[in-house]
Image 1 (spheres, one colour):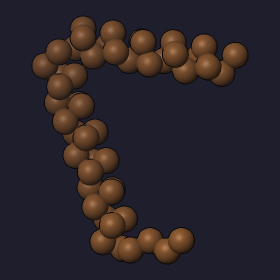
Image 2: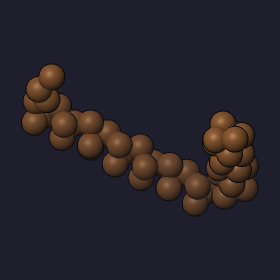
Image 3: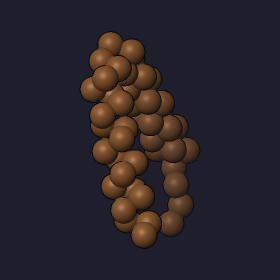
Amino acid sequence: MKYDKSEEVANFCGAVYKTFRWVYFCKRQPAFCRAIVLIILSRLVIKSH
């Protein structure tokens, strides 16, 4: 399967945009953000065992 360069760039830009939006959201809602991160981490730990 061959990737189109423009598609790759679009995927990368989308990921960067989501990351920046997440960081901005975390700055405004630090407690809520921490809770979500803890939930995600605990799920990952449970899955790995």
